[in-house]
Each structure stands twice: as C-alpha cells, then as structure tokens.
Image (cartoon, rainbow, N blue to C red; front, side):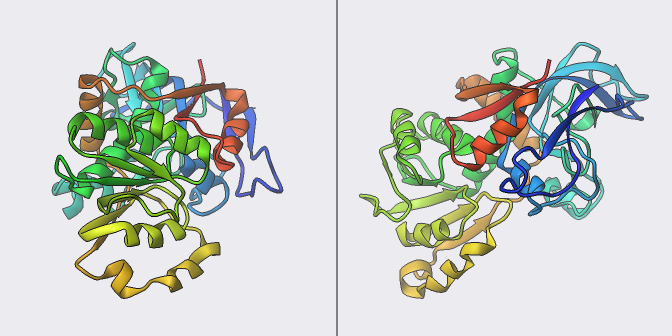
Length: 342
C-alpha cells in the first residue's frame, strides 16, 4: 500500500519534507480489529509535535494521522460490530486498557496504557490501517468523508474542552487561537448557547476576520483587551503568552481550559510575568485537556449531525501531506486541512 512515512524526528527548518511516500505492507487485522480502507485523513497540529519531537512516537518508522474516515475492508476474528463496506471513523484514541480506575470511571483518556492513533499505532496517512473494532465510530450519513474527518479530533477535543469550560447560556466565552478546533467550538456555541457571546484572540488578521465571519462578537490580537470580561476561555495555542493574557481577561471565578498537548519551551519566560492579583486571584481556575474518550467522539458526532455542524475544509492529495503540514505550521489556516487518500 502507499503511505506517507515518518522515519525519525526532524525540524521543518532543516527538513521541509519530513514525510516520505513509500510502499508499506498492507496491515492484517488481528483479533477484534478492523481493516479500514482509508478515504481521507485530517491534518492536526499534533502531527507537527510528533515530527519535531515534542511528543515523539515510541518507534520509527511510523504512519501519522488520527482523523481517519474510510470503509471496513476486512474483519479480524471476533470483530463483529461492523460489516465490510461500513463507513467508520477513527480518532486520537486507538485503545485503552479498559480495566483501570480511569477506564472504569469513563475517563479512558487518562488511562496509563492509552495508545494514540498515528503515534503508538500506525494511522491514516496511508491506504489502509487497523484499529480495534470497539474504538471505531460509525459516521453519520449527513457528512461527506472530508467533512467528517476533522470532527473526529478537532471537533471532539473542542467538544470536550467546551464541556470542561462549564459555561451557561448567556455567559461569555473566549477562544485563544482560531484553527480547526476553535472554529468548530464557535459554531457549537452559537447553536447550544444562543445568548452567549464568543470573543476570539488570534495572531493574524486573516484568522480574526474568519472568526467574525463565523459570528464572533469580537476578535482581536492576543494582547488586546476584549470589551467584556470572560467567564471561560479555551486556549488552543502551543505558546505560554496566551495563557498569561487569558488569565488577565477572565472574570472572577472564571476558568481557563488549556486544550494543547504541549507548550513551547522558548517562551516559558512569559510565566515569570504572572501577577497573582491580576492573573490568579478571585478564584480563577486553570484546567488542562488530555486526549479524548470514545464518549466524546460519539456524543460530538451525534451533536454535529443534529445541528448540523459542517467544518470549513481544505483538501490536499496524500502526496502533498508535507505541504499541508508546512502551511499549518506557518499559520496558513482556514478551518481544517484534510488529505484525500482514495
């Protein structure tokens, strides 16, 4: 099969094409697994973290990609939940142990044996992949393959972040960073909390204009003062400065939800700017988001179909995966990027 393969950690500056197109053996589904013929795969910031070594795969070579939509091509033994030809999706959660305290309490995202699609197991930047049947999701008929792909990670993690933010209808929400996940959160807020206003902080005017186009009440630069204090803010950036600025914009008792897999070392000095009265006093909270559960994906797909919530999508052929990733790294973003495999 054809696949874009990552052979090792590298920076984009020294290697602008870290993924290599190659022939790879077609995987064979094991007990309880599905073989999926991949149609499309979304492109995520997490792939940049894998490539550049901030959350490196445990072994190489590896096939990235964790927003996968395709058709069931074959079933392993005892994988009877789906039938050949069924359309399914796979998100970041590839598997979890199912027996630890975290799994039994519904927090399988915190399982110490959590395995990530496209990092701990080969993902969707290829013509075929395997996944445990229990961790595949039926795709609602209302979505095309390309529309469904970003829902599996950007949408699901945005849904979890919004749930952790805990806002009520009429309360103000801030979004710091405006990529694939944040633009879906904005659409969700407009439907689920019609009396709430969303305020967007983004690094360039292109992103800010896109936010206004989608219905943001206000959009400005990270360091700008919004016209109102915010009850909650969801941060999706890899930097520390937006965290410091967001805490300043929260109302008393407000909550900052950090939806990021890592923060960059280079601007850690920003944390030294923390001023307790201005940033943390009056019972402000900080909460991080770690991965997603199957429940997040299932509930979000149902909600997205009901709204209906359709992401803005830019498509690229699989051979242009490096280009899509480079554009993501440099902030050339409008909605979500999706690779067309088949």
